[in-house]
Image (cartoon, rainbow, N blue to C red; front, side, top):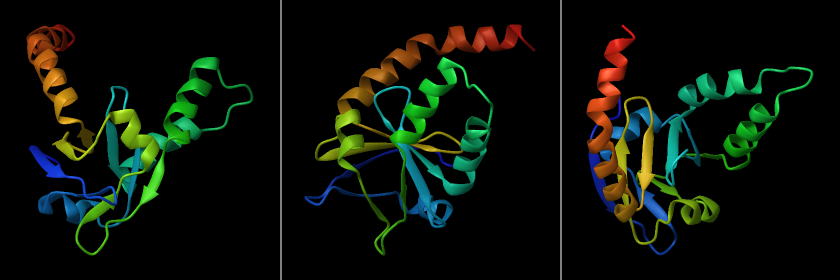
Length: 143
């Protein structure tokens, strides 16, 4: 389980260390892809397959929505491993998408991790905090 919020420097070779407590779960390989918001999502390999397998399920004529979603998810995905120091090399297209320069905020989101530009993360966090009570109430209505 990935919990917490951390800030780490990205080195001159675009390598980002991940928090030590995350490394064991990510040690078997990880997939980076674009998030729905302007962030990078990091999935352990097993979690990636839970997401990817249903998306990749064959249909004769996938809907336009499914094609668009598949392109968004799979065309931006990178299969990586941690180096000996617990770092990942951030692919340039994903760094650009997430506006990550020399510092990244690493956010644990239960079964995956998000990588954010600190400025965008702070903005997202404020927005989330303003809406969380409404989201919580709407979930309670459906139970």
